Image (cartoon, rainbow, N blue to C red; front, side, top):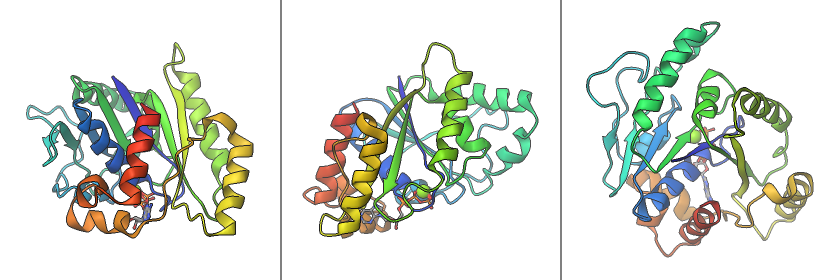
Length: 244
Ligand SMILES: Nc1ncnc2c1ncn2[C@@H]1O[C@H](COP(=O)(O)OP(=O)(O)OP(=O)(O)O)[C@@H](O)[C@H]1O
Ligand SMILES: [Mg+2]
C-alpha cells in the first residue's frame, strides 16, 4: 500500500485539485484507491459529488464503514466533514485519543492499494495525523510570488513526522509546480527558485493553469472525466506516472 499525503499549509495552491486528479488516475490503473478528505471545507468530497459526513469520522468506534464508493470505478472516498476540526481539539495534548484515531484510520485504509489524503491548509493535528499514516508526501507549490513563504515551517513539521517513524517509511514523494503559466516571467522565476532549492525532489511534470481544471469540480468530475483531452488532464496523467 502506498499512502500519499497531499499537503501544504498555504491555501489555494492546488492540494485538492491534485488529490482528486491523482486519486482518479490511480484508480484508472485498476488499483483499489481511497481518497480521504481531511479538510473541513470538504472540497474534494463535493468535487466528486459525494455528500459530506454528518459526524466527525475516526473519532468513535463505528460498526458501519466510514468509506463510500464514488461514481468512478475502483475509487472510494472517506468523505470530509465540516466538524473534522474536532479532531484538533480532541487530540491536542491527548496522545491516547490520537492513538485511537490512528488505529481507526489504519483499519479504514486496509485493503487499498493507494490512499491519498487531501489535507487542510494548516500544520495542525489533522495534517499531522495524515503524515503519521502516509508513506509519501506530495507538496503542490503554486507558481506565484509567495510560493516559498512558510515552507520552512512545513519542512520542520515533515522532519518531525519522519523522525517519529521507524524504518524511514515516510518519504518525501515530491514537489509539484501548479498553475504553471509558461507565458509569465514570474512562473520561470519561481520554478528556478524551487528547483535550485529542492533539486531532484521536484517533479519534472508541471501542472499548467487550465480553465478546464477549475471548471471540473462544479460538474462533480475529476479533470480526466470532464475534459480528457485538456492540457490539465494530460499533465495530471503524466504526474501520476512519474509519481508511481
Ligand atoms: N491547474 C489549474 N488551473 C486552473 N485553476 C486551478 C488549477 N489548479 C487549481 N485551480 C483552481 O485554484 C483554486 C484552488 O485550488 P485547490 O482548491 O485545489 O487548492 P487547495 O490548496 O486545495 O486550497 P485550500 O488550501 O483552500 O484547500 C480552485 O478554484 C481550483 O479550481
Ligand atoms: Mg483544498
